[in-house]
Length: 526
Figure 1 (cartoon, rainbow, N blue to C red):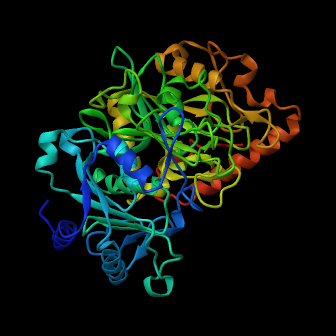
Figure 2: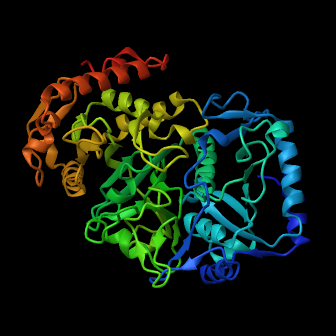
Figure 3: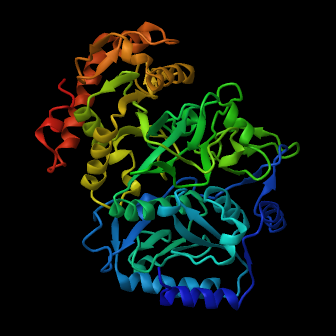
């Protein structure tokens, strides 16, 4: 891409003031501690707090309504329009704000497949946030860094705030994306996940226009090249289930599916670590060391020991670390086409089967539905699980119309014959507050059986409420767990809840007017 006037303005600004370009992680750790932004834990990880924002602010995210985006973007409550004039005003004042400040700049890539990667320059006023994005994006080779020319630029200045009466924003916080200017502006929030998800949003705009399916999913592969994908929103288990000691991690959150196969969009992982335990998640546990950024995790003031069970600040405690901190990770993180696709949902009602096999029509139905529960802390104001439908298991990050992503998925499932399963990592034995979360050991056993093909050989029953094929047996899982009704003490309460959730599915699906009848009929009947 050719440089725009904004590239020139920013380059001129950076050249005339103090800034640090592509500092190493040790240097960034030193800077963060010297600037009193963070502290070291006993194990060497860098621990930070993000103030009053401990999750994303989706209601403060905007897309500039310029000529580039006008006919492409799916405008609405997710992709809120911002006028060109408002963006111009924000950008002008933001440049004034950072003038004379010591800045940290990182140049990296989004997209492990060279033919689909995006060169991204990130400008930060905090050293720790620059370390965060250094670990999350793909780090260039020395030769690539020398001649680096950004395709997109992200400027993250938490200390700069919007003026709602002037800028037309909802609050002082903003995440504003201009596809025409290839520029993302973030202000008024210290939550680093906004940078990561802004880059993902950009890739969700660009990749489908090249015929590549962008996906909110994790991925891993076995020694024989058998790839598995795990779709799901934050907290449903993408990172945990993909970090399997028996398989090689491709990536934990964002991927593309091209004609050549799967590729990771990122170069690192962003693991939720509330109640993290070494025995159940050994790979993530071992990745929390020097170079890792811990967000809002509580530590002892004297010993600096970590308390993963302390949710004093938020349930959304996070660890950001490079992909190579996971033993056996696939680097470069590319692989072939998936043999199995897993849709993860954290059902707060506790009525969905723990695992079900989906037909192609059911797969399209549940992909478009994207049912799950938003878990505590992942967004501002979420204090306990809330049932929601998030199209394509990633609606907050999808700038294009859902039909574009659904069409690409359907074509790939048909072309490559991938098996599809719906896996409930949510509640069993009752809804949230009554039942308990599905044990991770049971979920791992079900996923391994699905990916290995072991569930191709067992008997299935049809769930009466949701019309799903549910295995009656799975290695490593008690038979009663496979039937959610059997885990409830009050069976009448179960059927009422199941009927209610089935109704919610149908009501939500009414918004999709482009769906063929065969897919619409594949939804819940109860």
